[in-house]
Image (tube, rainbow, N blue to C red):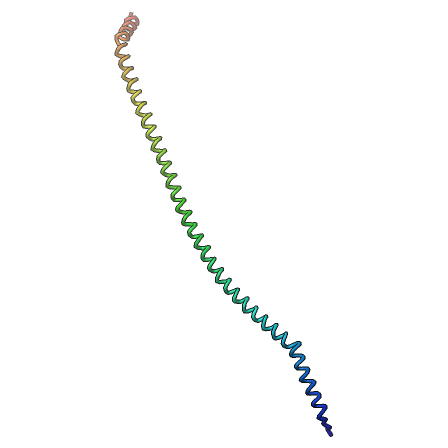
Length: 142
């Protein structure tokens, strides 16, 4: 029937154990250590990515705050400049109004002076004009 050889079984068992030990040292331990290091590097990468994600969100918040404050500062600067320009324009308009009013006063004074001078001249020339008019009237009636 089946012939069992104890030495052959022991030899096969020893060879099998030897093969397991050699394969464990040469193949399985390096693979397991590589898998462990890869797993650790993936965990580290995920942790780093999470940390970077938090940093990015913080930087985004800071950028939004900077933009918001820049907009406020720009609006304040615009309002300040606009106010100063409006004031400068208003001052120029008032100066021009004052100059025009002064010119109008001078013109009215000059007109009044000319009117008085013309009236005085007409009054002074009135006897001469009356004589000239009488002479013409008598000359045309004759």
